[in-house]
Length: 126
Image (tube, rainbow, N blue to C red):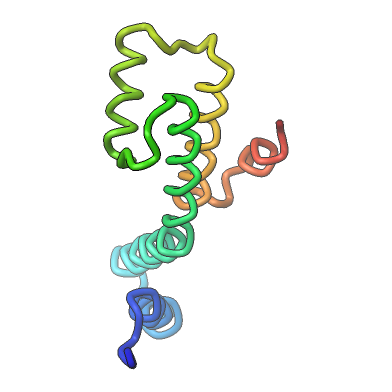
């Protein structure tokens, strides 16, 4: 039985402390740094919540795009993608490449900038 707090729970506890205890007591430069710390912790939490699914989706898209064996690692798939783009084998004329790049960017924006004004529109577009 694993009864220790998860990484997510630990990060959330620190974020709660910064947001609810520290930040209200701080002004000026220290207050600014507390807001930055809170934003970083929020980014970490969103990454924890979405990384597994985003990586799995990215790998599925790359396996199809590159026609690679299912056991190819995500890092190897990305290296192969870079090489094919550099070699001119895949270009912006490839609808599948552009779809993959768009979905990868959307997944990263969900973590880095979830309130980005164009994100909702990008998600809704086919």
